[in-house]
Length: 269
Ligand SMILES: [Fe+2]
Image (tube, rainbow, N blue to C red; front, top):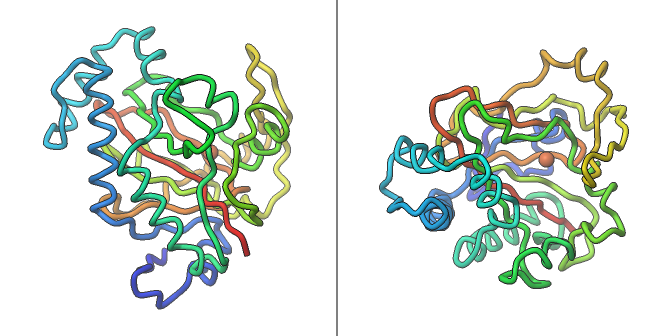
């Protein structure tokens, strides 16, 4: 795996072998931005759990606070509208994204806003609220979604009230996944390398009013052994991946939670 330093720009992401051939690349993510994101998340988790969590709290303390909530309270407090970054975390990620355009071979890069339906779901949101969710996966719970490629959701939601608003006209989408708390090789994002180049069969399934992609189960069964977690080291890295790359979050079998953050880069070539 090639880990490249964006600050040196020795090799641009658009020329990165892993990103082109495998559909993903592990790249550095500044520690100071991670710290800002972590603080923002812990402030929110402290309020939701009525605890004193702060940046010095251990993973055990965070786990205990979150896991002490009953299932219903967790479902409400940790629904997607409740898990959107705010304040300086947004500003620092935006700066990072806007600086990455040249490395990806584009002229402008930005992040999408929330969709009209999401904006209506919380009085704190407006048409300029960026879509910057974090995810908290508890031990041994189904807090993760099924395998998918992000373009499937974009296509399904196109021209509906779940179609995200976008600040720029763009040609490509890239997803970034940032490990934050309790992430390791057994509980973090997994990819099927090279699947962005395949026509992966899927159907659109409706369940309780939610419309989601459902990848052909025979295809998934025959590719099960190919799912891999891309990280050798989590601390100061993130992973960027292709809009068509098949990925999933595995069930968390550890005895602590894991928290990550993700966002989509819109790129104008
Ligand atoms: Fe995804």
